[in-house]
Every structure is written in structure tokens, then in C-alpha cells.
Image 1 (cartoon, rainbow, N blue to C red):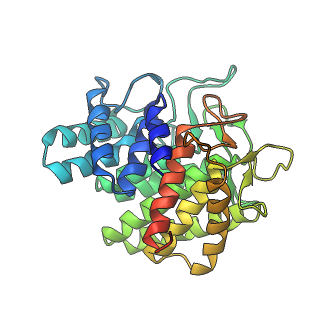
Image 2: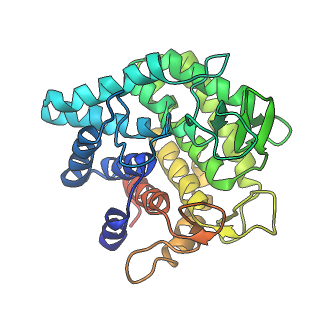
Length: 321
């Protein structure tokens, strides 16, 4: 695990990567690492309030992935520096971020795909924004954002999320059931559901939990015998990916640990965890995953490292070694 963490920290990071890596270390309880990462996220905050803006200048939702660790760092240290970062990020989302006509926060300020408008939603954003809104006390707004993703990206026929939609033009940019994207969605739903429970919002908690279970069951129908998934869940010709497997495993372990998921899912997580564990090289790099920077071919990535750390942390809480 130390090697996995060292390799993750050695990677160059965009805003979402800084956020998910810090969040993984927070969930693993390694205060000596995630608090300094939260500090740097605030130090690299843009003037408009977006956290960790070292590169990724077009990002809208990704910087919010850093928000919870900034809030938790304030709670841990009492230093208002961290609270300022979290509050500025929240103000950006609520008052400055571009939105769709029905109020869903866009993923970027530009389109990376020729012929499309910038008014796009990416399923990745379901992890970036709603959990942060939730921990900042905006639980109803978090639910509204999730419902927006469901309106625009959810495939009711398969109970899975598509990857990218251009809301302004009313057409999909990437109409694929991307495995990692559905992994992001699972983790975002889990965190939002748990926060709703902490804030005594049973209606929202049930809505988020029901959505989580429905998506999890749909994703697991495409799980391979070794616990992993194809990069496009329902395309067996796409390459095999371990990042999504670790996201699913992390979601299962935490769901069982938090009491809203039946233990019958444990075997699914264990198979995935042990398979990916066997594919960590001597440097601590998680191999055979959807690779950065383009995420269209096998490689390595910060989120693969982070997802493994999260899965391992929640697994240990269940008494697994």
C-alpha cells in the first residue's frame, strides 16, 4: 500500500486528480498526507474560487472534488484558511459556474469535441459536485444536481449512465456506458446518501440509496469472472479496466460498512480487489486500467491509484487483511 500511495503522489495532477487522491487519503485516515494536499488545493485556488487549479483552466465541476478535504481539514485543524477554500468553492458553484437551462452545473467552460457546445454534462461530475454540496449543508441542492444528471445522462433501459451529453444541442457527445464513469457515479451517490443520513434527511437518503443500488446491480451484470469490467461495460471488444473495478469494490465495501448494502455483495468486491491487487507492479503502479491523459486506452492513472486506496481502506474497516 505504501508503494501505491507513493506512486500516486508522484503523478502530475489536474484538479479532479488532486481531489480524488486527497479524498482517498482522507478515507484511509492518513492525515499527514491529505491535509497538506488540501492546503495546496487552496493555495492553487483560482481567483473565482475553483480549488487546485494547476492546469485544467477550463474545468468547472472537477475542482469541487477537493472541497470535502478542505472542509475536513478545517474541522481537524481549526485553521480558517481551509474553510475559506471550501466556502469559495461553494460560492463558485452556486453563483458563478455555467449551468444548463434547467440548472445543472456544466462540466467545463469549453467543448473538447469539435462541433459541440460547451454546455455539456459528464457523468464524472456526479462524483465531483453533489458530495461536496452535501457536506457543505446543501443536501437538497446536491439531490437536485443528481436528478439533473439522471434526466440527461441516465439510460433507463439499461439502468446505466452514458458518458457525455451536449445539453444545449440535445445530443450525446459520447453515448457509451463508460465503466469508469459509472464508477464515479456510484461513489458520488454513496457519499451523498451517507451525508443525507448524517443530516437527518431520510427522504433524500432513501432516494440516493435506491439510485445507488439500482446502478450497482446494473453495473454488476457486466462484471467479468475476475471481478473487472470492460472499459465500455457492454462492449466485450473494449479493453479490460481495473479502475472501475476498484470504484465498484470501494462502493460495495463502504456500503456494507455503512449498513445500506447487503453482505451478499461482498464476494463481488473481493474478487475484483484480489485481481487488481495482483496487477500492482514493483513501483506500486496499478496496471491494466483506463489510462491518463485521454482515458481511451490502457495505462495508468491517479484515479486508479486512488480507487485502490479507497477500496483497501473500506475493506480494512470490515476486518479484512
